[in-house]
Image 1 (tube, rainbow, N blue to C red):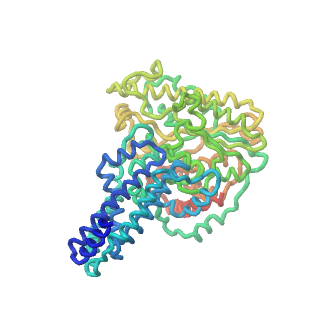
Image 2: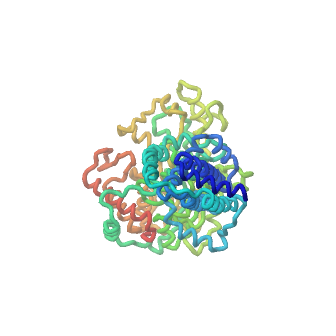
Image 3: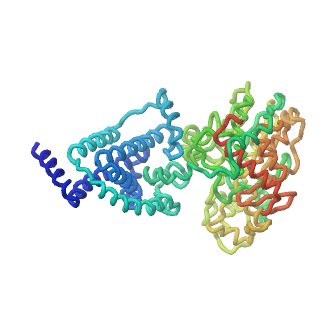
Length: 613
């Protein structure tokens, strides 16, 4: 009791002396800020290993970037109110609830809490009311609650002095001065990249692990700009509805609702089209055999040697430009759902890569299978190559509910670089051309061997479906050109033009292949052989082209809006390149510009209104 009484007397005397007052209040507020930051960091990584927490403590930049925003808010409220306990409570409560929300979102969905999720809080609260998501307080959370409560009581009773108005006004000056450099640091993308913890495992490709490797407060604030994507020029809900309402959605004719299996092949490209000499014809023979039986063409992607999800999400949404979706969004998957199809797919790698676990739900897939829930047990917990994935795609098709038409969109992992630059990993070489660097020889041969193996397994799928009594259409395409050495060393060694400012280099850089194939039953149902050479298209128009070739009708309102641009320019590359009247251009006509502008408006609306599919 004497010690408590001494604290009362001390803080009363301190209130009469500004310097002593600031020191007394400042000491406790700094101490509580540090504790608040540490508890937030302790919850930041959810169910992941404590190595993340160790990483926070080892990097002074991460400690500062997670602590300084908390301190800034606390000091701001203190200066505005003059009451330490109010400043503490007004800071501790939002940090506690946001950190706790992040913790449980990671536990429930392996998805971090970012700023744009603020508008989904009511939905999250509804989810916690069911049996699936039950909030249970652990020791860290209970200690966090105790910190908030006891800190409030301590500051209320023992740090009670009020700041005089003139000192509070003066205190605002350094806060205003500090705000701008703090904001700049929090939003700096280069600093964010530099502070990403490079831990073993999937951190390089996992959106979730990249986020939590920074703590919580820092990446949460860094995510603010992403919550406010710029609206397209001329956008309004009314303008978007006017565009979409021009088109009446068309159902797929009941008699043409064939089964569809679409497979995106990792880094799969026909390098023979680049003029590389010395490639063994056997490398591409299986794939060329498939092309001879199919409707084929060039797929002009937006990416090179990486960024797989851009192509896959352009394909399933019809969006020329995609992002990391955070909520239910319009997609062709949803259109198929509404047409009575069962929609599912597979990726034989981690569900956290590119946040596929959550985003594929937002896109409308009823089921999606990953390493964690299907393929791990097939390969001792390791990522599966095509000898496991492709037969399993066939198995899923054969075990489907035959009372419903079926849509499967799967993404392979085999073909992912690097391919090995010091030895042959697949046996005999498939390329014996000229080269300057040994790495070129090994990289190219290992890539071609992997590609040939994938082609053989795709051929296996064709053979098993050819005489199937049910109609099925296969869609197969590559997502991007392969990585062939750091700084494109093998491409350079082989003299491949990758100058995207010119037509040849542009196509060399961005082009893969697509093919549509129908089994005998599907050819009869659709009334087409589905063979021949098709146009070069962007991934966002690939589904549109499929509907056109199969006679599925005009599709959803959004697909018809996209078709207006497709008819003018079937290639709309995010680098600003178009193909108009069969010619490559970076200066499209006003008609193309207008169609692109309208599609951006429709896309922006459709991202938050999936009912349009």
